[in-house]
Length: 102
Image (tube, rainbow, N blue to C red; front, side, top):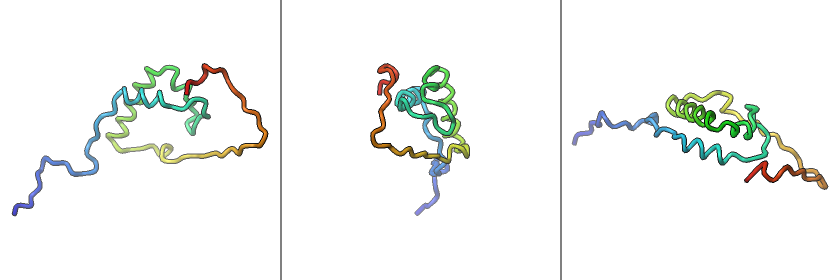
């Protein structure tokens, strides 16, 4: 019984993933929630959506770089959650109907 492995077979976890496509990035940006506070990076969703063609290219390149190298920024490995308690009787402020389609 020959137990030698095929040298061409890549069984490692570090096998290259399929590239992330512009359509994937475009769909992810489209699904961002509207009207949410900016995150740790201080970039509100509305800013990212302003010039989506440029942002899509940059995000696509960045995501593929991260997937291919496996190197993540330390800032991306942490989260900050701020809870905002609801106050009974508080008024709900509403913006223009066309501000958000979600």
